[in-house]
Image (cartoon, rainbow, N blue to C red; front, top):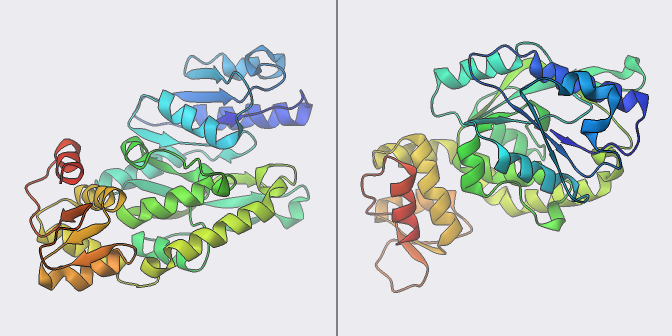
Length: 324
């Protein structure tokens, strides 16, 4: 949870306490730790009397930044400090509903290929008459359709995701162009390679805050979102992306997850892919932003996807993709 309290405003302290408590009351059969990243609030969070009761829980750990480094830095600091296999995040004025983590864990356990599960949310306004549920649900295919419509499909505070994938992708992007849509920039790469889903149930209460990040930087978010949509539209709009990913995994005897790792590393580190002739069209649909050829070539920065060895773990995936 990234936190910056500009003042000891009673309302803000109340929101923070409610947000923290909504995490700590979750009932799951896994260890839980809340990492609260204080982004150099004028008064250190741990010394503010109004929130001391919730901070006293031994599952709460506070990391204080030496100076204010903004949201993306705070998120990446929290990721680096985390020690468990699954990551969730929540803003300091939003609320998880009871049963959120349990519902997401149940879905992830039912499908080990899932790497991220989000939920629907309720939008809370200063005037409650405007409050409404925003329902999003669906499989990996449906997630891509939401992106194709120009939406960021995952309410950020609703996600539960594998820490390992965050690490593979390098955490939240630090490109200043995407400083206020860092989540969409990350998810667009994530969903390209890894299976995701959204629960229809509402488990997040999201507070509409005109002075929050989304309110203050709406124009910047919109610009960044348009750039992202243009950058990735060619592969999102094919309508066959997920099916092609599944065929690639099956053809090469890989799990969906390991296939995603292999293809991400190939995309990240190589400009040219060598493939079997019969695979060229399919692979090109996955990677319109890479050169895909079906013949031997002396091209630099190329990877031969026509001869993939047995790959069962991350180490062998990195060895194949980064040493090719």
